[in-house]
Length: 285
Image 1 (tube, rainbow, N blue to C red):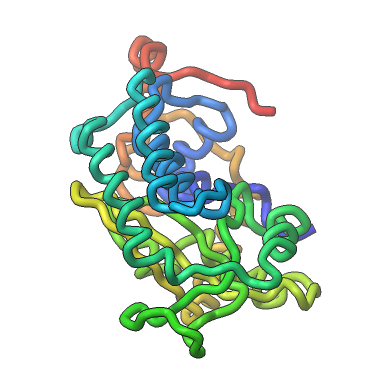
Image 2: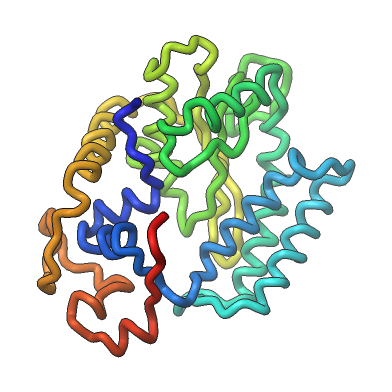
C-alpha cells in the first residue's frame, strides 16, 4: 500500500486553502446545489480534444468541433453557475477556439506509441492508488520542441503521459512542480513501483480559457523532487488530521491565510437559511 490516500487534486487544493472547507465538503458531504459551468466546460472541452483517440474519423478537427458544439449546446438545459466573468455564449466561443487551436498547433505533436495502450492500462488500473482520483488522459510520443515542426528527429519523447486541462491561465504548465497531479506522476515514474515498464515523461496540454481561447503544450522533467516531498507530506497530513475540526467561525485558516469566503461560509457563520438554499448534503460512500 502506498502512502497515497485516494485524494483528488481538487480535494488537496481545498485542504491547502482551508481545512474546514475540506472537512465540510469531503467529510461531511456538503455540496453546492448549483453546478459550476467551468466544470462542465472542462469535461466537454477535454473530451473534444481527446476525440481523435476515442472517435475514429478521417476529419479529426471537424469531428472534435462538432462534438464540442453538440455537448455544449446541451448545457443550455442545465442550471449552472457561470459566475461574473462568463456566459454560455462566451464559453462557447472560448471552447470552440481552444479545440480549433489544438488541431492547429498541438495535434501534430502527439502520435501513438508502441506501448501506449498497455502503459495507459497499467498506470490507470494497476497503479491507480498513486494517482488519487485522477487518471492519465493520454500516453504516446510527444514532440517537445515547441518552436520546431515535428519531424523524424530526436525531438520526440516516447512514453509521455499527457494531462489535458482547461485553465484561466498557463500557470499549471509553467509551474508543474506545484501541481499535485504532475508531482504524483513524477513520484510514480521515479521508482515508486519496481515495474521497469512504468517509466515515462510528463506533459500538459492546456486549453487556456480566455475569451479568444487557445491551446498550449508543455513538458517538464526538472525541479519536481522537492515538490514531490512537499505534496507527499500534505497527503500524509490529510490522512492523519482530516477529522480534527471545530465549527467556530474563523477568519484566518490553519496556515495563516485569510478566509476565502467559500461556498460553505453560511455554515461557518451560522446562517442556516442561506445554507438550506445553496447547499445539499450527500452521504459518503
